[in-house]
Length: 386
Image 1: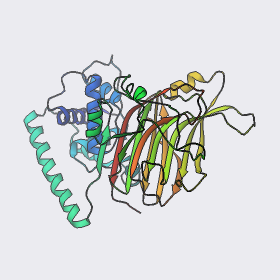
Image 2: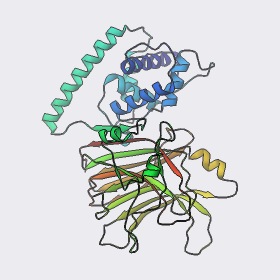
Image 3: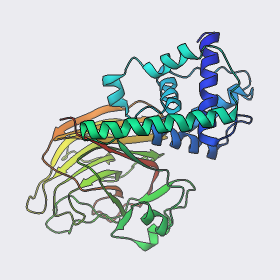
Image 4: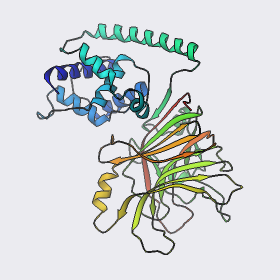
């Protein structure tokens, strides 16, 4: 990045900071401020910039980074430019398909090559003006195309009181009071435990997932994403993830996407595994589900624990539904903003009405219950393309 680009990048960051906090950047971001900034960007743009990156950028501009230079990716710069200019929300797949040339950053860079001190009043006036223009544009699009802009719900789980969760649209199914009372034992994270239960069809057991946290899905086509922190399943059937449901009684169809442990090979000797599993169930009248994906993430050996622990510091699952098509993606790494990779794509007539966050260990009794800590959840809905 040359000097002129760095100047434009600095101005862009300062404008974004002003829009979010209403004051000029004078001190480095705290962790809580960085998370607020990151969530604000996600809500406005549909795109993610990790809070630690934002904190590092603020330290760099204020000389608090021990001289270390920060060089954000072009995608990050484009996201900041989209936030500042009030661009319509999108997501990474849409941006990759339609705007992989990152026009918002390059347009901003070309118009703002020299650093400038902007008066807060002018920024507020520009923000209000841009908001009015954007609102009028959205209204015009609604009337011309019959479709409103994408709606986005995000939750960082900083407030886990029952009334707060209910007010945000969450509902707990099959509550286990003992473990539900421990949901906030790690500040800033939602802790669900791998309790006994499953929605896998079993003639001897009624389907049940304890402390299943569910909410309604507002539209037919959507993108859902959940981030986990340091979840490492270690016993058979232990898993955590996302489940899509036609109803909350498990009588209808469902699709379950989870990070799971596997040590069951029908008697064949194989290495223990941590896997990504996608299971589709057709409802109460069908005895066998379909395993859509069984992808090995790690093979567990005597010397692999450090590698696994480092890479599963941050893991994330994403489900994208467009018409009949479901795309399932996974991300893991030491940093929270690692890229997603595709796990599977499947076609189904299922029309999920609910989405749930879960942790379970199947119907076994002899394994301990471990926490699955959820760091954030987002749900974006909009018109279908297919």
